[in-house]
Length: 361
Length: 79
Image (cartoon, rainbow over all chains, first blue to last red; front, top):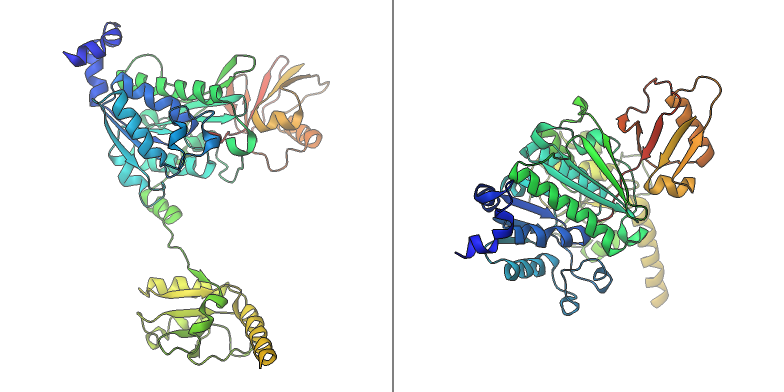
């Protein structure tokens, strides 16, 4: 039988056996990031027989990736990483069900995506995404296998394993900046080693063998082969509710436009320019379809406005107008945008336009 | 005498991966961190602190003991 032949060398390990192989076949692992770490993790999980693998990456392959992202061929430069990785895995082990996700991971798709998998692997290179993965793992109750590199050093840990400590328990300060591989430099073997350690944690969790790196961070230095484990505790302050998650990651974007890009609309009846400054503020702007409702009265006079009409909102410098857009969005206005730089920027542009007009005439 | 280990971007600032420090009077962890910050200007660098392989709060009032090993562990971002 193909399956037992394929996996024979690991099935004969007493810690795995047929039972363990079955567990692998039934497991679903999502790998976020198909870069250096992902390139090390993916083939090992696939060839070991993990039943379902999701690969999320929105990047395309660049030539500078190839020295460490060893699953990609030179001929694949310019192609989607997620799709190329999927092709590679399907050839490596057709028994694995693979899904490629080329969409960027965000607060909007993380929860529904994570729900479909048992284990989430963080193979990303951005701190803010690591917090997003951590928080989404907390809400969906999934373990997060963390791996990260700084030059010749790497870190590995498993967060939220059986409600254990999380990334936030280790690093509560979200506003930290750390260099990624592009900026700091990296060699292929460092990401290879750390990725392999991550793959190892995934397999141990699925098989229920060994000790999972939960509540511990492993720090590895490939230059002197030193490795240390540091213990850390769960902090009660670092939990997150679904409401907080939504609030934090799914804030509606306030759309800003440059006045220059809407200049040709200033005489159109279809659009409305809304000045939310107080009556006594200057410079005065007077466009054809313009009304003034100071921000403090906007909510009371909201019925004066048409929900479907494109509305360009401005204030003095572009701050209050954003608040106004937020307010209108709450009332289901779909086409409200804030003019960047406000009346000051508008006045300047109108003046420039007038001058050049006079000049050309 | 205590040993302080530095990792990642912190070690870039200190230009060494570890150093031994001696202290005559009682030294708290907070004071040690203040001194190191003054010496190396960590500024906006974030890091967690471990004493003898255990991450502790930076604001804990722990008094350092001879032969303690302190480690400064910043988050890494590469992948």
